[in-house]
Image (tube, rainbow, N blue to C red):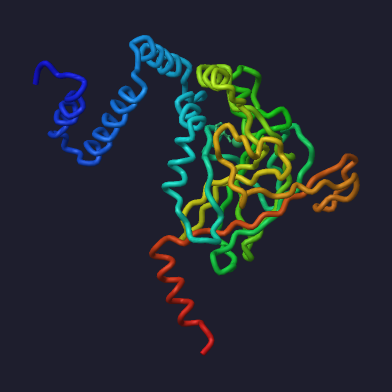
Amino acid sequence: MQNLNEDNITRAVIAMHAGAENARLRELMTSLVQHLHSFARDVGLTEAEWFTGIRFLTDIGHITTDKRQEFILLSDTLGLSMLVTALNNRKPQGCTEATVFGPFHVEGSPRIPLGGDVANGAQGEPCFVRGSVVDLQGRPVPGAELQVWQADATGHYDVQYAAAGEGDHEHRARATLNVDALGKFHFKTIRAEAYPIPHDGPVGKMLEALGRHPWRPAHLHFMITAPGFERLITHVFRNGDQYLDSDAVFGVRSSLIADWIEHPPGVTPDGARSAIPFYTLDFRFVLNPLPAASGRAAAAGARTAPV
Ligand code: BEZ
Ligand code: FE
């Protein structure tokens, strides 16, 4: 294999992978090489442009730590994260749609009781969230566990303060709770606000060069798990937000937009009194049964159906 040229080099590279033991790896790398080479041919990639690309990826590597994942931001802002989410979350009509995970989830957030305080000192306008977790037939899913996380009024997640050396905001505006026997939940938190994704690094520079803004519309993150159901990773977006049609990471689904209803100062849903306006949000999550569970549910339905 010598004297390769622009017409046969792609085939030659792919042929070199023929001995890979892992068939899936071979498939992935074959397609990646084909697409990378096609890209270079399509645009007539210059050497200077190729080097700029290498420099860009190097800068992304340099800024990336376990607290700052610039490669995920790149994937998010190029729409790849949302594409992978869509490819892997095809659900029956009626199920709550999934959206991007984002880099700010933390394992082991504090467990709170129903009605508990998610904010835990995070600054923001008071907000009372309630809702339910049901199956496709609208039946409650009493075994569901919810993890919720969000940014504060300044548009920062707790983990961003520590990363910036700005003190300990650990486990603020994030919590884990269980629904009740009727599949219902409620908690107190702060109003979700729009915020820019981290844009002080190479991805921010890329967005600027492309004439794009870094903003995400206001949202609340949820991860919902329950035995017999697919895990749901999603957001609820705030209706009326100015960035709903230009989310920097392409995550908005219209079915996930809900009203944060503003209330004047007065008695709040938990029976306390607020001297300032507060907000309420209601949302129903519909989980997708796992294949085996949906078979069982169908069988159970057949047994209990009226005759
Ligand atoms: C988020 O919603 O937390 C997020 C998603 C993608 C990139 C940055 C932040
Ligand atoms: Fe977020």
